[in-house]
Length: 521
Image (cartoon, rainbow, N blue to C red):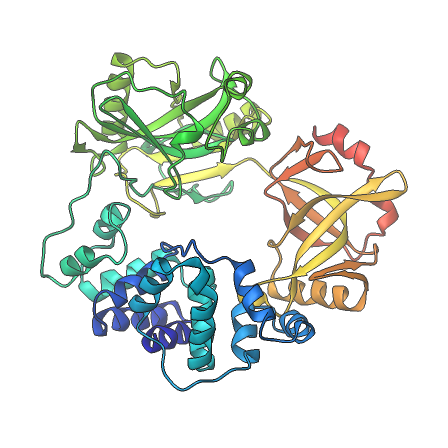
């Protein structure tokens, strides 16, 4: 555990991306299995200790620490793990076991023994180890290390291709001993079951109007970008597997989608709600998401279909290295032979120049259906991640509204010392009703301005929440707005973010909620 705690402490204190890769690479090279495998699982958020929740950890702390001291300390520090590491009152002789031993113990012991075990761990650990231990147990390290960066470090340590690591990643499990044998040159690349395994998706780079002016328009095609969720579909032996963009198996949420082909095929597409292949808005799709059991009524009310974009595998043949144009032909052939009421083929648009495409985007975007355009290079292979120069997403211009700052909450990680999560609202006659929350869109200087306003203008406290004087206006950008029965205002914003601070605008000039609905719904 000592080596792991030192590792994540170094990563937290190291701003340089290249230096973080070097630190991780050295750790993987100099530590043995299964410790490094479990460390890898924690770093990539691939390990969940389901027996232990945040509430359980807080309960353990409150049984050993004065509650008022904990509340005050947590409020000041802003990070649970750091707070516990600083105020834990007990110290015993001894040392923490290795990370693999800790994880094995916490996943196998009886629930009745968990509290005593964690208390003992905290008591024999030093400050840094306590912090690392709570981070491990609670999940969500927040140390500025992404899953992609960690895999990049694996590639550096092993001198293997990063794309090859990505290709097998979702087919292997912690503590990844077969992976490290291959990375160390002691075995062949792990074999995975394509019929059950998610394959990392290819993503697009965002562009604006002038970003592609130097590109040859004849080398690219365009497709509509829809307001659904990106999915990967695996059809094999009368089974259907549906994965989200992050690799979560969401098949149980959409039991009506059937496989009527004998082929093994892996498809890339967009899952949408709608009838006759006419999409409804994203709010309708949310009625079907994250449900393990779906009633027939829900399926009838919110029918789903998948807009097909691409094919990765066909009859176990890997097509990812082939050009997009080749894969498209194969997809069209398969689609014609295997008609399925739940699949619809995306429309491909060709254009002579970028001005024509600009007109298409401006004139033909349908509100709450098209999100914009996907622009794809005809010769592009299917590469996991976000490679440059191949795929672009040209989203429709965001909508904006000036709103009133209402509430604020402290952030996490690097933002734990600042109020960085904000709730904002509009006038409803003479009261203000919240319409959304935003925690990004502003730069560091604007964050300091907002934080200072919250501290100087707090009127009420509700635990970590601060209610502020309704005197500050912020400009909110958002992609779309839908009716919502969950919110008192009756609306829900899609991807809200703070675009600008409107210190120049008085709150009495902010529009009424009724007008907002007329303008945007």
